[in-house]
Length: 196
Image (cartoon, rainbow, N blue to C red):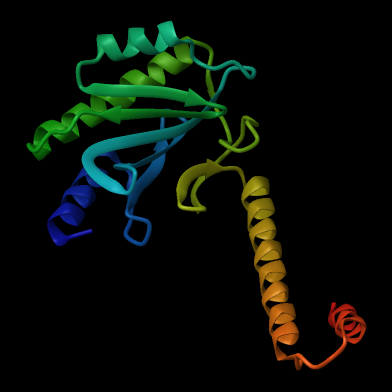
C-alpha cells in the first residue's frame, strides 16, 4: 500500500472510529455492535479503489433474499453491491476519488446497513460459527473476518496442526530422497515405514 493510500485509510479510520491495521491493510472495529472490517475491493488479484465492508450477522440461519439485496442497493446510490454468504454480509461501495465524499458515503452506508440488518432481525455474530457473541477482526487464509474467541483459538490450533503436518511430510520426503536407489523395494518400504 503506497503512502497516499495508507494516509487515506488512516483518515477514513479516524473519521469512522475504526482502527487501521497497517500489517493487514484494513480498518476494523465496532459499529452498532457489529464487528466491521473495511478494506480495498480485490477481484482476481487486482485491487480496485472501492471499499469492501464485511461484518458478521445472523438471522437464525437465514440469509438475505435477492429481493432484499436488490431493495437495499437500489435505495443506496453509493452502494455497488451487497452479498450474504453464511454468517457474512459484504457491502461494496462505489469508487470515489474525493476522499471527503468517500468518508461521508462510507459512514452513511455503514449506518444504513446496520439499521437495515437489525430491521430484518439480524444480530451481530461470529462469522465462522454464527454465535451471537463478542468478536474481533482476524486475518485467516488471506481473508479478514470477525471471529469469537473460541473460533479464533480453534482456527489457530488447526493452522498450527496443518503446518506441523506439512513439515512432517517435508521431513519424510527428505528421508525418502536420501535413500540410495540400489536398495530393494521391500527394504525401501521398510525404511519408509520406520521413518513414519
